[in-house]
Length: 466
Image (tube, rainbow, N blue to C red; front, side, top):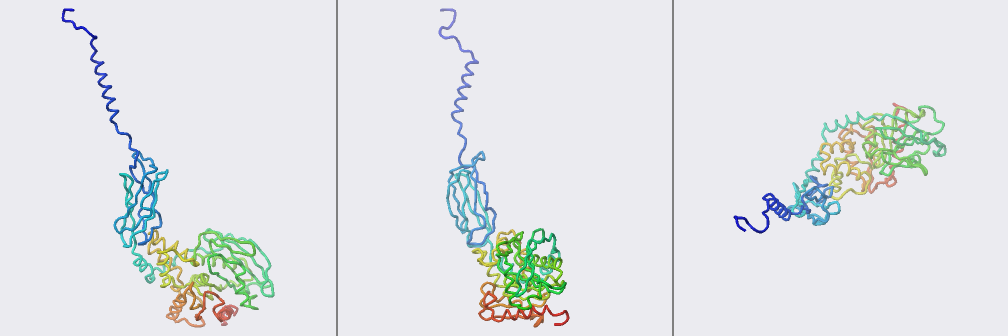
């Protein structure tokens, strides 16, 4: 053909060519885009951050983390490592695998040197730092057990004055005739509300007594497993014929049972060893005075052993109606070296299985270590349990303690003895009997029960006739 024409396939329009190029380019870009990241992208600390603890011991909380991918989704199966900083203790385990929720955990034992410490957590390219403070335990204990100040004692007095120990919502749960020596008496199990919780106690009234003729004698028990109504027998048997000349009250303490026969009644509220125990006891005394015509309303007399002796002494410091206390091997001074030793031991290894020590550890020592309770707050907890700091307010007291008591050491009695001597208080206002080889048991203190009987029997004398 002529005329400048071309032969072969027809020409491709320009727009078609451009479309082909664009499609090819698009396909090429798609082939080179990296797949979405599915490995660890970040680590979130779930538990155990910013704790305080004792050097050489694990803090209260284990360390727990969650591994997340770039889109914030949990990564299961990721290898996780835990590495303390130099001198910052040990992790166990040092490596593990994240579970189905992307979580992993370890126990971190802090290093031996007080101060800031860190634990590095890593998973793939992701990392996180967990920080802790190893406290100077001896410095903390020295601050906690420094002598109490006048201001601290007065702060506790003010707290006591604000507490409401009136008897509210009184209810009689059980009434039954019981033997009292060779005679009979009426037992009432009563409940009442104090500080918003229901408390149970027992009241025993000799039958046939005239109105307002019988002094109130309260028994405050030891241990932290509650109390049985039958526990009063150690008092009534010791009193003999004079047992019919008292009204008896037996308080249970918060969270603990009052038992009678095959029945029991559990007082509500969290335990309040030595401190709110006193509220419970004094509130029960108010129930006695309001519901028992035979009771004289002018005084409270208390026999207490161990924990109950501490409660009795604190009640005497708080309530001027308390006139006479027979205290057997009870705590008096929570600033004593024995308590400091216990605090050190529980901070390091947990509490001994002794009455009250688990409570002291959980409400004072461990919160102080963790930093959730300040030193000033912790000191007030010790002040309000230390009757020796309120010795000038105590009524007539007779103390009995054995030198071989390994539950409450004799140093507790000796602290009160020194303080009373400094105040010039002596017999018959204050007496202390120390029994060589005596243990944490009424019956191991030879002659103690007859002495206590004669001391308590003074309550039967008309006022003004010692």
